[in-house]
Image 1 (cartoon, one colour):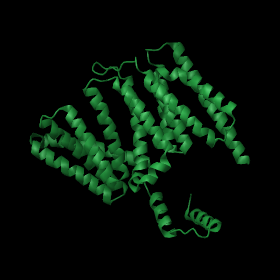
Image 2: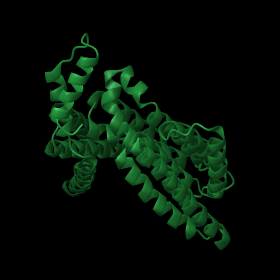
Image 3: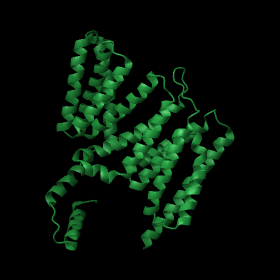
Image 4: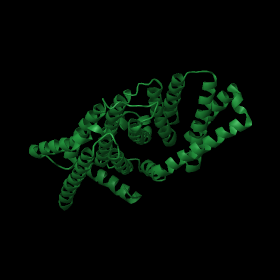
Length: 357
């Protein structure tokens, strides 16, 4: 809906169809205006990066002033800054206060982590505390910027736990889990936001946070560091899960594109499986494709762009990966091109036919 006139026209249409239906027009217009004034995701992400830079500068200041030497001072200051960041973001909802709140929140978390390490806590315990703080903040703050940051912190802490315990192969199971969660969150939007008012407020930041976390987890697989080596023996596990998720998403796309003939469905399933088989060696590519299909299905442009960018990056990464032969790389590029050309032709044909009707 582009403007208030369209909203009013839609409400009048519903009342014409059923005169017993009543609406609170002022509340609807107010909610629309609030949503219309809401900052874009790009602005929010810039706010987070600004907060990160401010956090690093402030932590550097602590080292210079000597405050770092006092564990008690660090613990108290970190706790106050975290609470202050949550409090500010709960009351105010503007770009300036978003930047202030996320800066306070991140600075507080960094300072608290430093205090916990000075208390000689283990790295595993500190990671678990970070997950707990982020989860509580997610529920209490109920705001976009803190919720988004909290999701990233939780997933980052989980990957940190995997690294600290040297269970690198567990990343395959974690990526598979994220693939299922992301798919469920996208496809069950209506049910999720209708369960509780809290879920409706947290849905958008949690969804985009999961998208970033899901795609970022694939970078972990590409790492070939002295201390981080992920075995490729089980790399097929997340690939199989993601491919199954893609096939499930296709079943929903059939309804949107009005594909009802069984022969067409079976043909598309077979073609999709054949095209996706080369990506078994690189679940990151099929993961990006999953995000693209989900975003197209629910018409979520932000994650669609993110998925396309991730797809281009992962294909480039895969192509230059020396673990695979040139033939494998060529097959991947060829099959990916066929997949997207097929999707374009299919959707273009169906959408064009719908417009004519």
